[in-house]
Image (spheres, one colour):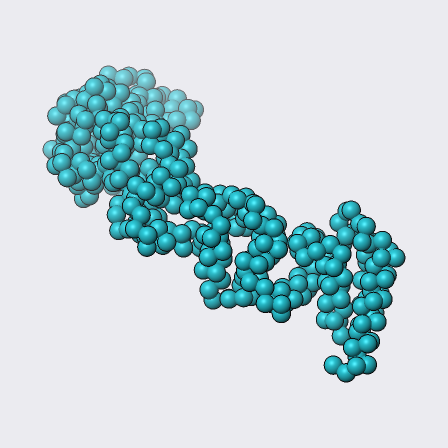
Length: 446
């Protein structure tokens, strides 16, 4: 730069400083960028640099920084970027500020201090200028900026503080991604330091004395670390819980877990670990039935929330025909008639509908295998005793399902022939007409 240009630049900077003071912008107590005098000043500076707009931005940044300091300027810029009217301009000025730090060889640690981020602790990621620091670290070392930032953070905070900081930050969408990367580096550090799963559990402030630890977001971090060690996290959790609960108690806890706001991945993981334990112990379909106290549920068994746990375990044992295995246990315990009535009642109530539907399907297949006719099942279900209430009987739907299974696409003809053997044509006709006026039976009657 020639002497004349240097003098010209000095004069322009001096003029900018003078106008800044005249407009009392150095005394502003509110958001500088929102003031009308600030817009006047910016227009004046920009006009002085019509051929070199970048130079105008440099003067604006240096003037504000000289009056308020880099940290205050950074906060002003972050706030200005939130408003659509000032976002573009504030972004340009931020680029100038970052370039100034690079030119003066500021380290990531230097800028961390300069932005007064030292005292933020767990709330670090929530500080508005944290993003400014991230941007600077990225400019310093784009490919390894995460490692650079982690080196600054680990020099300031203990591992347990860092862990909590990252967990809290992962819950906010804007900081979730960077916090997850920082946490990955922390977990890798723990692995290099030889920390055990138990030590990590304590560092994450997880407490097994109550079940609340199952709801803690820190559990997700611990799970990631245990997997990094090549261990099964849920097997370890199960071992801890087994000291306080019976297997039936654990299963009951899993049943109500979602209502207790325990994350689904935790429920699924613990359930899998529990099932693996039962398999290792060679527990049969029948033994788990008893373990879950389903043998004491009486005729309410199909309404029991424990039925889901039992069904899931049986499915793990016998992936091809789990409901056949369940049906066998239930049939042995209750007998055909009682089990059939239980399925009819449960189907009508709508509770445990999926399991009831599958078990009913096994029952129907059993009748087919036994060569039962449509009339046999009509009598077995005692539909021949229902008289005028036939179409309203809970068992009628099951009979319709069975006839449909026998006849496929055209069951109506077979059903009508069976009905005619039990009811005179006039009475049957009146029953069908009456059924057409009842929503629940209209579909069949029509």
